[in-house]
Amino acid sequence: MKKIGMIGGLSWVSTAEYYKRTNEMMQQAAGGVSSARIVLESVNRQNYVDAVIHRRDEDAACQQILASARALEAAGAEFIVITCNDVHRFVPAIQPLIAIPFLHIADVTAAAVAARGLRRVAILGVRKTMESDFYPEILERHGVEAIIPSEAEKAFIHDSIYDELVQNRFRDETRQEYQRIITALGERGADCVALACTEIPLLLRPEDAPLPAFSTTELHCKAAVAQAIGGNGRTSLA
Image 1: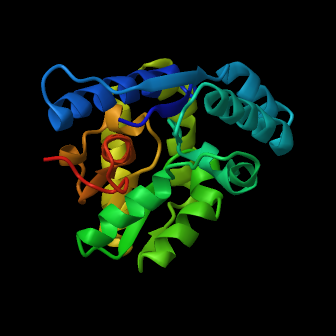
Image 2 (image 1 turned 180 degrees about the vertical axis):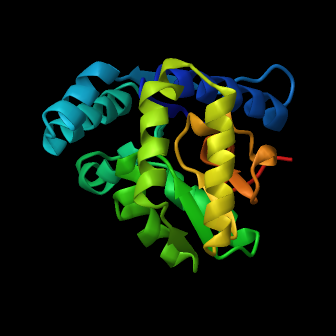
């Protein structure tokens, strides 16, 4: 079994869910009382937010993630999972500087959407996720188009993540607004939705969404287990 390197802390809420689901899936996949071999590097979210939001210093934020990746490599991790969607925008800059691969959350998500025969996926996440190129570019390689929420929708989604979800607050009113936004995106042509913030599935279960919905957390954990036990990182567990 390969050792999973996990970059967490962004936020601790989704990191805890990653640890839980990865181990639940590993026990299911490997049998008995198996648990995943995980080494966790937990970033101080406040330091990251200070760099990204307050100083708008993308290089400083990238350096924090690079330091975590190097720490995982030194600890014997064989591949890296980042428990946060938007941080994946740094992967192209970091990957050449370390010897172990990243399991990219957008790659895993794009493969799952394409496998369902869906072609226009709405991306819900923080602004960096919704406005960066990494999801549209990776989706395009799988024959899938990214649909981005309107400015008002982006503002609501981003603010709810920062003000509520990463602080472990999940309100019915917020859930209902997400459902309304997803319905509106469907009316504008989306045939499915990616819950592309790892806290969103804790607020809104995919089965409660008005469109077919993909939990990036769930897909990423499944892929990590598959890769750890020798698969290609895209095998879905039953």
